[in-house]
Image (tube, rainbow, N blue to C red; front, side, top):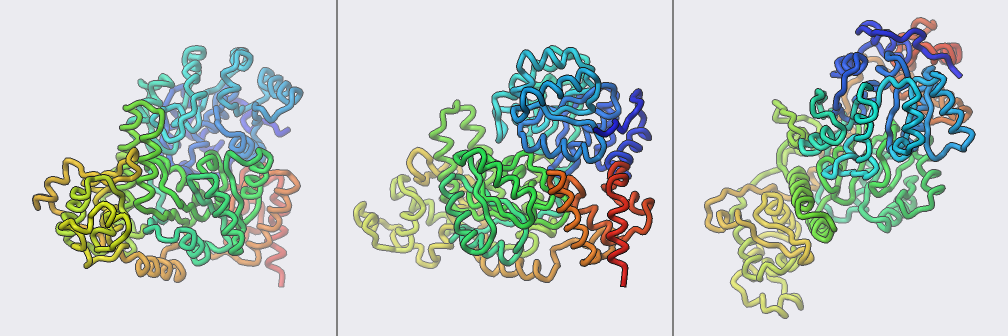
Length: 622
């Protein structure tokens, strides 16, 4: 076991925090709000931290745990997250351990002994384990540096990932009032933030909010046509051979999509709660440890996955909220490299989500909040303006620039047209057919299609029959979705997707409300984005301007894979891709030069320095 990297922990200073950041983690500077948070918690303060995935949340509790006397207790909801973070800390020379259901009695007893002996810097514990009388009693006897509640949005009933066991964490402030508490999440709107603060007794504590912007992620939402074929094309043309996550709403769809991708030559694995636990674990391990694996999953997969080189996240079904969308898409590009958040979306998605809300057993208040969150997400999907600006605005972050330059709407702005007459025809059709029918039937009536259903209800005799022949079915579907997003129509979940007029539709029908609609021309748009992607126009220039040596880069990755297999850890725990890139670009000749590369701390230099320099020298040989 490594010795603790902090031999004498007392009062800290910014310089001490910076020296530990460098010696343990191999980093030379803090990012954003990290230094303020570290200083505040290391001084004994409580706080709530909102920071995007990949923004460096872990350091905000790991570093204060090393600076303060005692062991930091990290409450984490997922075994995979605990395992990978602890493996990474041990690689960096930190005394870290987990206490969860995967340990045998003997292993758990050894961890408890080390905690009481003061031999641990950080201990990761599942919430249900922490709340047992035995564990609370154990912690009461130990010297505790701080409590960190990771994925803190799980405590909120308004959050997208509510977990009942998190509710009991209020006991921490009651039993250990003198121990600082830090709650962290990558996503929470104002309502969720308020509930986190109340449940964890942090109402008087400062809230540190970092920018939610992930500039390396390209946001793209396409009209759903044949979503599976659209997905295959997206992967083949933009992310062939790269790791990605595909989210689907149902287990059956997960299986079908994974099978179809595999048949198309894309290495894809299914993941959902209905699979055997051992099979799920194997699939997750392959995704984490192998290159180029695509995991097709329900939302049961993802929280706590620390894989830095996920190049894309795709949605084939609409998530429940902007928070869920942001959390899920945020699993792409944790290493800061160009990545994609791609979604295929249609009117049926809105109907399906509304039905799920209406049929849920939640209270009326819960349903109202859920519908509001769904409406906000539909607004993001249908906006004709910058998606990033809309996304950040939802979290209360103002953006001055009109264009982000890295979403589909900014890369290829959609054409707009006056849609007042189109909207009036659509609303009139919904009204005259009794507000009892879904999109397909309304379109049949508008274009004058004599279906069995149209004649059965006599809708071919209505004045609205055939008045919309100037548009095709795809254009009418796009118009319908936009009117739903604007709030002039709503999909009734209880009436199987019947489209009903809202209060605001009156102004549209009277001609008092202006309506501007996006023209549906996705195929041309998508071709333009794909062409820019192939030409490299969407990829930022490396910050240091240096180009990596391809042969050395490949040799370093092969070496890393061997080390990872031998140690039984994910490759990125040994060295992050960014560190590999740095070595391949700068070709260090000495240990001192190697130590200057981000991600090479004292322990990694000690363990791997000579081997890495040997690889560089071999690459330089004629």
